[in-house]
Image (cartoon, rainbow, N blue to C red; front, side):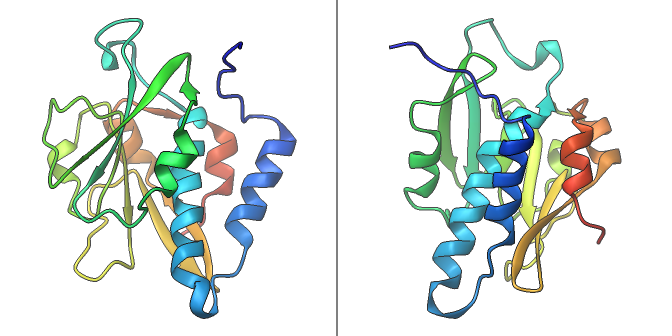
Length: 176
């Protein structure tokens, strides 16, 4: 069976992304729906970001998607990335209490301050609304607006981490 690379730059894919993000998170199903939307966003963000050439040890190195601290996704993220590839690379999930510089993460989701990874080629993603959490230093921060999962992009943080974010993804970002 032929493996298909991630290709989510089409208008149809962007529309799907907006629909997923636009579903209201209300009632008893709010947390599972919110976690599912965030897990989908994490996976979809990959196609809209370019990492510098030195971000990968070798041409066949995996793309490492890391979850730091408490994991709000359970198996949702595992299912979202199962069998998927990022730029021709297999996606590898890593979970730890904390990741430091040089950990090999390419995308890191967590609720701890991300300043310690400033300058590293890591797409850092956090939540603004997690109790005790902090979006400090994150490139992308999830926010809830009108019961919908949205995200804010810090273009300066992305540039500081040597990441190029697609204008299509930038256009979907909300203002803080």
